[in-house]
Structures are given as structure tokens and as C-alpha cells.
Image 1 (cartoon, helix red, strand yellow):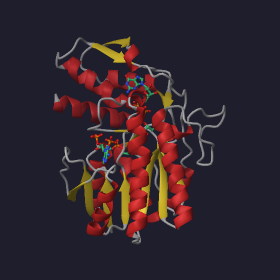
Image 2: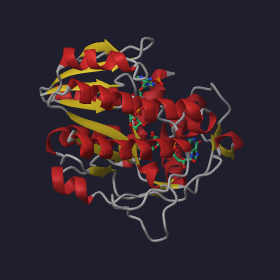
Image 3: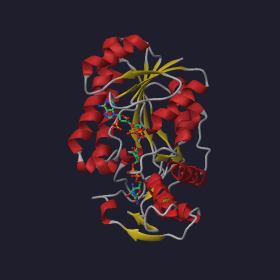
Length: 310
Ligand code: A2R
Ligand code: GDD
């Protein structure tokens, strides 16, 4: 199998390259001109906002599966840069789909959406099935809901082989510090090394989110590349949400020094959905996948990563 990963220099990209290469796939991955990719793959440069440059990449790689990961992926950043988020996540996706349509080869495309798309969910709706109505609560979520709708339109109108995923929170070593597990672990590692006061800055600890290890998530992406049903949308998650407080407590138990906790207004969102938890029976039924790595393991590995980095 030949895969093309668009947006391969990000957090998930590196893990996906390793996952696909480990089972013998031939992998090509794209990055922006200012980025680099190291790994078992052919590296190409691509900006999804430059529509004309996408088709030549497809013609060069001739992939069986395209993984479209390129995005502005942060909810927090989307509040600050809404236009940029919409441009990359919506216009960028249209550019990718248009290029694949014009290329015309026999390609499966995986569009990576988000559990955030469900947004303001009705009481009692969790665990959320894929048919639950989408009521996004932030700009990032709205752009990902839009991406999924556009994917469905292309699949139906042009009979393209497109699989949509709604990935719930995922984390692991190497994730940017703007995301909560990485953020907490980095602060602990800094405090242990005396690089900051032993005071942990936190945001909304009562939000409940469903966390999966990135190493499990990329296995799901691999399986959907071959076993997913064309035109379907799949939730990817553990299927059990926890309070952010639980993450904080688990991380603090691993700290080598005592750390105080303080609320940081800059870490609070303009609006934060209270609970997001998926039903993951569809992906399990179609591919056999389920999350295996524990949250405690993910947090411990992420803390070790930061201890090694600082
Ligand atoms: O923003 P940067 O400089 O970190 O670059 C990101 C890249 N990217 C682009 N690639 C091509 N054309 C663009 N116009 C463009 N703008 C941004 O996509 C980054 O290298 C990559 C996305 O990686 P991350 O931000 O690390 O996201 P992650 O965690 O790997 O998530 C992959 C997918 C995304 O669609 C998320 O929205 C979803 O999974 O959760
Ligand atoms: N980042 C951060 N830092 N979040 C905090 C903190 C903190 O100090 N304290 C509490 N939180 C809460 C946030 O308010 C949010 O409710 C939750 O922790 C998770 O925040 P993030 O890790 O920043 O992730 P996200 O849920 O906004 O978005 C991630 O998950 C989506 C899927 O549900 C990203 O990975 C998205 O790309 C992904 O689509």
C-alpha cells in the first residue's frame, strides 16, 4: 500500500509515518517549506492553500490512501486566529479534495475531524454516536464540522472514496505544550529542574474529555485506510471521558517535587463544552480497533519526554 500524508510534520504525522512503515506501507509525507520530517518516508513540500501544487504531488506519489492531517489544530488558537483557522481547515480541505478529484486516480482519502464537532450536546446524549447532530461550540470545531460536510458532499456527488473521522482528544510524547496533558507534564518537568517556581498553572479542571494515546490513534487511521467503509464517519476515542482534574492529579502524583496549583485566567476558554464522550462501537465493529494504552501510561511517557527535553 502507498500512503500520502498531507501535514506530516505535525504531532500525529510522525507517529502515523512510523505506524504505516512498520507494517510495510510505502509512505510519502508533506510538510510546509519551513518544516522538516525525519522518518521512514519520502518527504515533499506542500502548502494546502496553494491549490495548484497539490495535483503534481498526487501524480508523483500515486497513493492508495491520502491522510489529510494538515490543519490549524488548536481550539485555543482558533479563538485568536479565526480567519486563519477557517482558511487552512476549510479552504485547505477543499483544495485537497478538488486536486484528488482532478487527479482522478483510485484513491481513498481520510479526512481527520474532531470530537469537538458535536459541541453543545443535549443532556443524556453521551456516549455520542456518529449520527448525533453537530452543534460546534468554537471556531475550530465549526471548521472541522464543515470539513466533514464537504467530505460527504464530495463522496456523494463525485463518488469519491472518502472516510471521515472524528478524533477525540489524543496525546503522547512530543505533543505541543498548548494541549493539556503536554502542558501539565512540561510544567512539572520544569519545576523539577528548578526552571520555574513549583506552581502549576491550570485552566478549566471540570471539563470532561475522552483521551486516547496517539499511538493507538494512528493504528485506527491505518486500519480505516484499508478496512473503513467508504462514505462513513467514525468516532475515534477511548469511550470513557474523565475530568481534566483527573489528569492533573495523575500527573502530580508522578512529580518528584511538591507542586502548588493555581488557576490561570489565560488558560480559560471563552466557552468550554462541559462533557464530550464518544460511542466507539462503529470503528470497533468495522475494524476491530479499540484503545489499549492507559491514560496513566500516556501521562507518564509524556512527562518522561519533557524530562528528557529540558
Ligand atoms: O501550523 P504548523 O506550522 O505547525 O504546520 C501544521 C501543518 N499545516 C499545514 N500544512 C500544509 N498547508 C498548510 N497551509 C498548513 N497549515 C498548517 O499541518 C502542522 O505541521 C500540521 C498539522 O499538525 P498539528 O498541528 O501538529 O496537528 P496534529 O495534532 O498532528 O493533528 C493532525 C490532525 C489535524 O487535522 C487536527 O485538527 C486533527 O488531527 O485533530
Ligand atoms: N491546553 C490546556 N491547558 N487545556 C486546559 C488546561 C490547561 O492548562 N486546563 C484545563 N484545560 C482544559 C481545556 O479547557 C479543555 O476543556 C481540555 O482541557 C482539553 O484541552 P486541550 O488539550 O487544549 O484540547 P482541546 O480539547 O481543546 O482540543 C484537542 O482535542 C480535539 C478533539 O477533542 C485538540 O487535539 C484538537 O485538535 C482535537 O480535535
